[in-house]
Length: 296
Image (tube, rainbow, N blue to C red):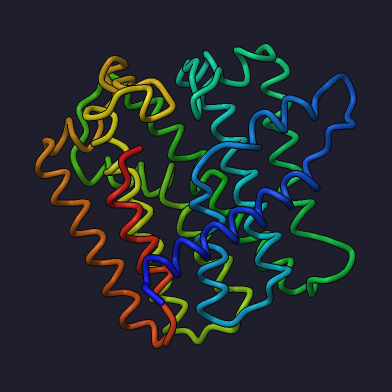
């Protein structure tokens, strides 16, 4: 079977599994309509890249499927909660996300804040079922996700981003910010999937390097798309970072250099997979390509 067709079939199947799990595990019957806002913020939208990374890494290692599906859902809940909060007026103040009004526009700022809080908590509830996943693996998955989402990862990177508005940043500082803000959760997605298997130390390090490379590549491409695509294509407001005078890879490196850097990061991701010692890395290789070649 053609590799592209194999990947497309696999990704459709896995996205459907993630959507089904989200539909089942994100409640609607919550006080004061909170679940409606939660479901609006996480269902029926997005590429589900992070869940796919979890499931591809698990597949490469022949890991535990139930644990990986829970990890995939948990990662997507953290990602969705971060978008709900990032879009609020006190942060990025955006009105469009995934082609529809942002959660605070639809439900109000207070409900959006609570919906994000509830999705964050639900992510860790999903990771810790009473049965089906060994406690030691639960603990490892919780630790990986918490570190990626907290002060050392996504939240810390967002703090740097807000503090950097209107300032000139060097490439090294910009890289550190985005390794935290965007890259940490993508890297954790790979490692959570790997943790559902039994990776040797060298394999774990190689997958960590792979995750770091695609995590940064994703942000580089995001910055490129922000200045080259229309809002209708992106599903969010184009040009927001430039209008807000935020440092980006395009503003720091220039457009063509940013494109070259994205290609370099893809090469680094592929090289990491080559030294992983894993026989089946085709899904992860294709995901690295998709990150760099995407147009939205």
